Figure 1 (spheres, rainbow over the protein chains, first blue to last red):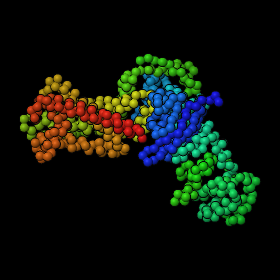
Figure 2: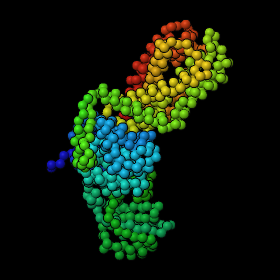
Figure 3: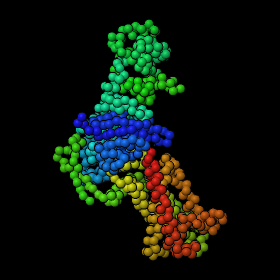
Figure 4: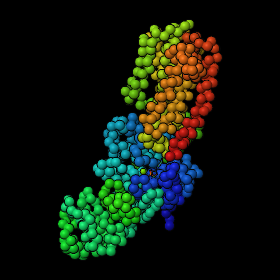
Length: 336
Length: 285
Ligand SMILES: Nc1ncnc2c1ncn2[C@@H]1O[C@H](COP(=O)(O)OP(=O)(O)O)[C@@H](O)[C@H]1O
Ligand SMILES: [Mg+2]
């Protein structure tokens, strides 16, 4: 094992009053690698990042960033990190260039170096045309790119990106992914948090799944997908179909796997039902016949590989992204 | 202070031809000064860019000066001095007290917008974050007060102070603005919403400025209010500034300025650590 860890997190705990935000988190980020901290809203992602970037102190546990103890030498840690927080933290009244020059100087660059570096980064993030406009006039995607640029002024060895694409439209999100992907290729160590399973899959070498302040799984996207077994059968039924009837028909068809691996996910908005289906393509003809016999009309039927959504649902019993429909119905029934 | 060159790790390339970036290393004290100045500059850059804000910040004191000069000055006779001089001194100091809201709102917004977190993740002294803001607000107060004094002079305010007295009055007002800025900081750091900051940041100011010697003599107030008005610090400061400008001291005390300074220093001694405590507490979660 030649690889060293750029981030080490051991037993971190943190409470805010009665809210237990972190209940003992452990993970590491290898030098030059990208770890995606994946979890739903309120899982404790931001709290973890804020501890690692010395913004708050944990109640218990320890952490190292770039080989330095976060609690013992916070000021040394700050000289070695870049942080792009959950909200684009740039000054709206300043122009893009002014922001970068100011942050560069606060990173102790000389004025000349800060200026030059600002221009390089503006160019790199395709903000040159907007460089002299106040940030107020920027789109969400431009702000995020500027925010990211501001954390790269002195090429920090470890970069923290807290939900870098939350709130962006799909096009800006893709733009952000490209930019982050380039950084990663350059060998920067990145800890990235996200609620988007697709994003972790796309950008991270390894994924640490957290929920309610605990790590519930970690591994590569493939390893996580394997944990939840084989393929999924997904059917779409016409509007107005009796969903309970469709559900029991699906359970019948999928057999034991459906019961073992979390049952049927129902997306009532899209009239879609999904079930673990280990039989795969071979089992399809039988499935179609059985559903037909049960009187379930099909608008669409598909077989797909498990997504990280399925991983999350299997691991936690609830969906990762609020409002995406998957499993929410079941979940709210359980909670009720 | 020394400069050194940053080694640029692979990737985030600074370009093959461009010379390496230079970083400055400074001592702690030098860093505090330089970084506070950088942050103060950043706060002040918004002044010319938000004309509506600037308009609001200057028009209010100017409006007060004109209203009080032409609506009230004639109706409020002050024995022993010109009521214009009396009221103008009061209104100028009152404007400064209101200005303390800037610090509260500015800090509150920096926290809300996440800028505070970014600043705190940078390798700079954290004291610069508060100091930079207070420095900027102090300069704004000087600017706005200069306008107020100019307008007051134009509408008949006639101080008879010598240069030393002018300097004393300005110094006292600056000390007051500095002190109140820390109180503004406590408010901005304690209250969570900017709306609460704006309203609560103002409510304490009204009784302190109106139940004072700013516009009327405290003797004209009901007994209980008179007792408060005569003994509260804003009155003391107004009396001191007015005394320096016009030579008029209601309580015939040449020590008024000294007492005012003692009050302000005492408030600073309490308010600065409290603001730092409020800052730490707010930042802890
Ligand atoms: N400053 C705070 N005060 C009180 N509760 C907080 C604070 N910050 C976070 N929490 C709570 O801690 C939990 C974890 O929050 P957070 O780390 O922000 O989650 P995430 O970033 O994964 O959405 C949530 O329940 C949240 O409400
Ligand atoms: Mg978060």
